Image (cartoon, rainbow, N blue to C red; front, side, top):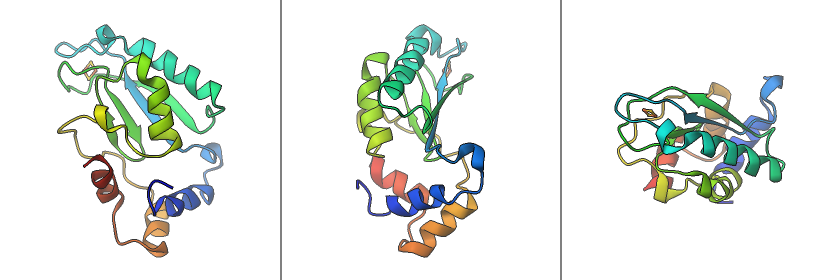
Length: 154
Ligand code: FES
């Protein structure tokens, strides 16, 4: 396990009462916008979405990872921009040819692909579900999910 507390979060997700998402581990948002000053679309974000879905399909992970499109997040010319929830990890410059590496590192191992983690990224915007936070706290950690993300991304 890449992080000693991953089992806590994994168990909390297993225990989730939200049946629709019982197998969901990550929700990856990919900017597909042609924003006035960024332009992820021009940076081939559509190719990234297709490559991600193909890679997830090859590995049988389509039920565990949902890939959605999002609109411009005003991040400048760094596209394509991705945000991985629930960890709140932002990526930029992650192109379709890196989809396999991204899935292996971020999805399978649960560790951000450091070379593409956005520098100066916004703080995580997703609130950690209370049952996940409680399970993590109860188990063995005093570390918050945000601290874990910071630790992983250096
Ligand atoms: S167009 Fe993607 S962040 Fe602006």
